[in-house]
Image 1 (cartoon, rainbow, N blue to C red):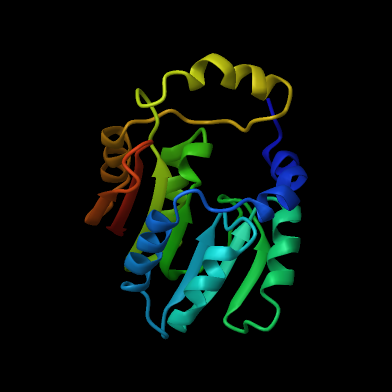
Image 2 (cartoon, rainbow, N blue to C red):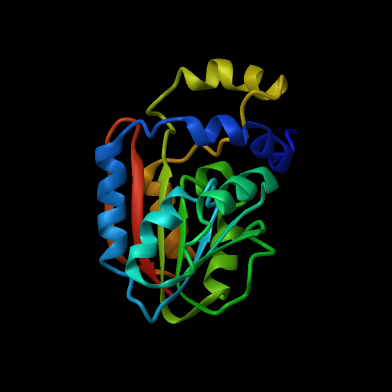
Length: 202
């Protein structure tokens, strides 16, 4: 099994230079997220990568703690975020993330990389204030990209690909409901491969 901390640290420099594939969907995600943030909010981002999204959302005025389990990602994020006082970057995974409680917890392009999604959602719920929001967007590629199953195990075996949790949109929604969240907003963008955007209340 690939060590995710080592994998993401190793590819961090290349990841930082990689352009966003679907800028329209990314900008729409930012727009919808910003509509839920305010300057008096304390916000936690899980799996922040090299910090691009946290720094874009800093315009909300919220106090953002952005975390990632890979030290290499956070090193780059801190360099990019120098001079942005309302964003702090920390090396943490989901289970050892700051306890908060937070008004909003965000996780983008993360849940499909986690084996125990229900456990992750429980950890998120425990760190939210009563009535707090979780905002996520995750790939749901089960049945949508069957060819991945042919070569992904080989890439994982040689350390060239991370773990991927194959889920449908319906399965993702069910996990949020089972975790006790009330859905506020959902969407699918992009459509192919489908990425599920979810805003839910604790």
